[in-house]
Amino acid sequence: MTDLATAPAPVPADPAGSTGRRTLAAAAWPLLGLAIAIGLWWAATALFAINTVVLPSPPAVISGFNRYREFLLEESWHTAAATVEGFLLSVAVGLLIGIAIAAWRPFERMFSPLLVAFNAVPKVALAPLVLIWFGYGRTPILAMAFMVCFFPIVLSTATGLTSTPADLAELVRSMDASRLQTFVRVRLPAALPQIFVGLKVAMPLAVIGVVVGEMQYGENGLGTIIVQTSGQGDTSTAFAAITLLALISIVLYYVLVLVERIALPWVRATTSQR
Image 1 (tube, helix red, strand yellow):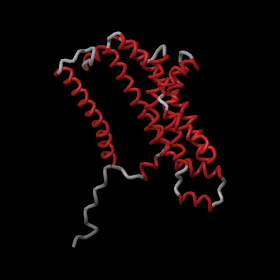
Image 2 (cartoon, one colour):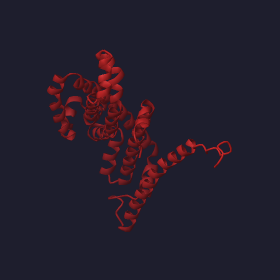
Image 3 (cartoon, one colour):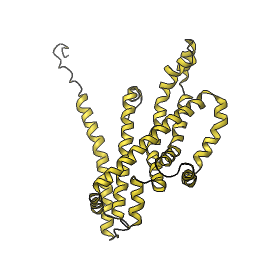
Image 4 (tube, one colour):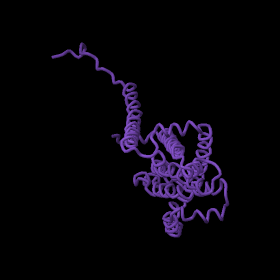
């Protein structure tokens, strides 16, 4: 029988190495997917001899970007700033409406059908009215971004605040906590994961809303460039602008994911991971 005193010490786990491997894998898989997509795109344009005006190849898109690099990057900043501004406006209004729906049942019964109906209306159909209401410029662009992305925030906020775990609700009732204390200490923290789901759904929608607004009423931004260059047959530059839009959406989305991980560290520790 092995003597416990002389038994070899167990090898400690290597959390740092494991974390590093997970980080490397998290970066490698998206890059691999991107490389495959670009390869298929490039192969299709070469194999079928597709006209550049119809579908430019990746080198043609890079060439279109290099021709107007400074201008495209400057317009990307305008689009990104408008996206963040419209998103924050949606967050402010969406959280307030979601809290009101969760806190007061008559409010929910009065306005939930109207919110659903408004969300069902194609926002492009409202484009002429938005132009009449706000004219040209930045305001209608922000209005379009708001209309596109505020509903998921309202829905996720109301759902999260009305889905407080029963044991926590019973606990705060037994402690004779006030409604404000219950909201701040229990209901809001329990609802934050659900709220962030709505925020992550709304962020790419804000980019879509801004681009639609720029195409309709904008004087600058990537949406305006797409309309102008595609109308002139410069599809390569239009695709370069579309690629920049995709990058803006990805960066803003993962910034939001990072904020979620910093603000809600307990979520990953208390949920199962694949």
